[in-house]
Length: 410
Ligand code: 9WN
Image (cartoon, rainbow, N blue to C red; front, side, top):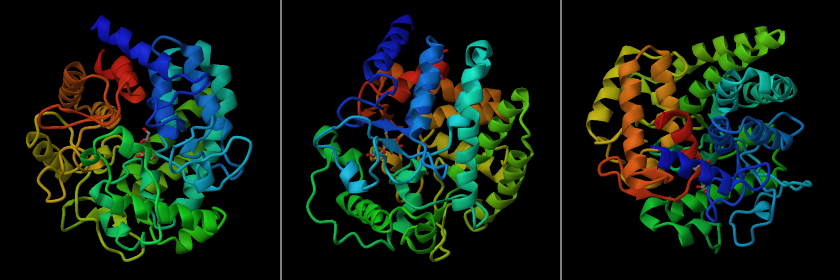
């Protein structure tokens, strides 16, 4: 284990670009939002100062309206596509124009609780920024009751089958010619297809053309889907932000109200036919009709229902290593293609945290052991084949190293 601990620490140090951490060299040469929160969690196991610095560089890129962008383009990386010019956001340090899963409060709480003395003043400085970001989600994305995403990348679970129904509304035919960085780095069968990518780019063009005006995006962007995954993460993040605010002497009643509001709102994402939480296309009203790992975050928000226990058991028993990013018994399942089946270590950590919160210690231990077994056999990869543990995607991956240090390798 010590050797893997050393390797994990070396990966975090190696991916450190001086105050921010890239998810992996080459494939992802910038700062990504939720990757950074995991990096901070990993750093906190051996360098508390560096952990707080990671949050600070991420929140330094916060927009005036409170949004914390999904990518921060600190340094030029020629050849990366879609880079800052495609997003067209501008600024001293350009960013992308969408957000990403709001896990920072949850991971920051764990970082702070591990060493409150080192973190309290830094937490005090970051707290208003977290609050503004949570408010941004509530004000711009929650009109339907649950949280909506305006781009599959905003969900963090890029090409999971949940988005197929909403992406069908998006015309990607004007995408033109472009060279994907991921295609040069990773086997094509493990990445999103060209059709999906063309549609992702059409959505970026829509946002750029309207100057990233949130009202226009929510009213008219061809893609808008309510997501159980982000909703559960935001509920949990609200709970954790309130828990951080109380010892600081903050009035957390607004945050408690948001959590209660979303706990009621997420019930709009119960698909009675599927008997599961499910994503919903807010343009057409259609259900995604497939259970993804986003729905398995229900325990994290303490919104579980007995039917979800049966899905958890069934999906888990259909693979060797839990938990698949999409239902292994659904026709859309693909064991190696990005979010359409593989196991993601950071999702396992979040689902595991949820299982623990719900008192399912045995399930959490099983998930932690299976995650550890994947890393021990395939290395610090981006994601893994749930049937045979084959390594997929990028190598020397930041969140895999972080999850090892803070959870799976404990
Ligand atoms: C687009 C960095 C990011 C993760 C996402 C993951 C993938 C990017 C991509 O990599 O997304 O944001 O190019 O595919 O899906 O969750 O944050 O690791």
